[in-house]
Image 1 (tube, rainbow, N blue to C red):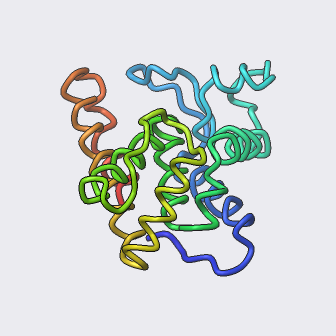
Image 2: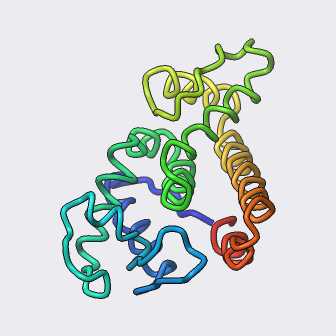
Length: 189
């Protein structure tokens, strides 16, 4: 699934970005996609919000990589998660790219709360969609208690929540059915 990184945790993101860009492909402007024109998985709205003013057909891979690093890795503090649990950070990054970082973090927070055995292992965390001190402390306690298998279980829990969200999106908006197979095939590992 996701590689385990023993050294250079901060270089993890380079491979994750390359994987996302390769999976997302080049230019797309699918009529059912609410994101509109995209290139390398970056929507026109996101590109514009980050200073790009040109035609999306010419949006560069380097510009996409910079946005992924800044907006989808550093800003949500997935680098802080990667130090503790690299496979979990990789899952959060990928989920965040597709659903938004706050959604990915909320999935993590929900999983941590549901797996704390009635708050006996650690206190519930606030579902605020942000990786902060409280979420990191809960993650540290969870990993210390559950050890190596804990990271695997958290990744599975996030993927389960992600899969349910994809199904709900397709059920609520039939146009999303055009994307459901790809979401399930390419986003759940």
